[in-house]
Amino acid sequence: MGEEGYWTAVCPPEEAATALGDEPRPDAVVVEATSANGAACLPTLPQDARETAATPTIALIGKAQLPTYEPPQGIDDFLVLPARAAELAARIRQLLQRRHPHLDGNNRLCCGDLVMNLASREVFLAGRPVTLAYKEYELLRFFVSNRDTAFTREALLNRVWGYDFYGGTRTVDVHIRRLRSKIEDARHSFIETVRNVGYRFRPNR
Image (cartoon, rainbow, N blue to C red; front, side, top):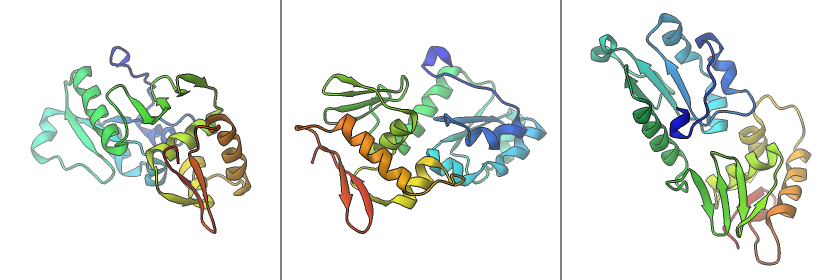
């Protein structure tokens, strides 16, 4: 998968549920469901973590399973082994495009002068590189992927920090302030404060 532009990490099937909640969270999850252990772990993948990370999940199955195979809830697609890396990469790109409609063909999220390269985790504003901390990057990616939608601070905590985060909503305000200082200037303004609600991302309002 490295030749297709993806860095991969491998874990045993019984650790898949934990891996989805790890930092950094994966852009996609591929589960080998040909073994009993692999098939058994599919229903246990945490839906909250998958929604938080907007992570597409693909199952790999054997030819003998195909006639009766029904993807369990939470599985977005499946491939029959043996499968070429190029085909798997193409399926991943399709699912990412579906989850992130603003994603271009080069695996970038673009919003006017603001460009996020998801493969390299680089951010550029009008061609200038912007250095972001890990959570600042994740917050910005969530905003750009869900532009024009207002979110409460609690919703942002759940979707970006995760359901098991025990900090308060003040964390969101601090990260918003830092993010604004790095991506906004006299020509660019993206993050809008919505009174009595929270925040909304709008393309260079």
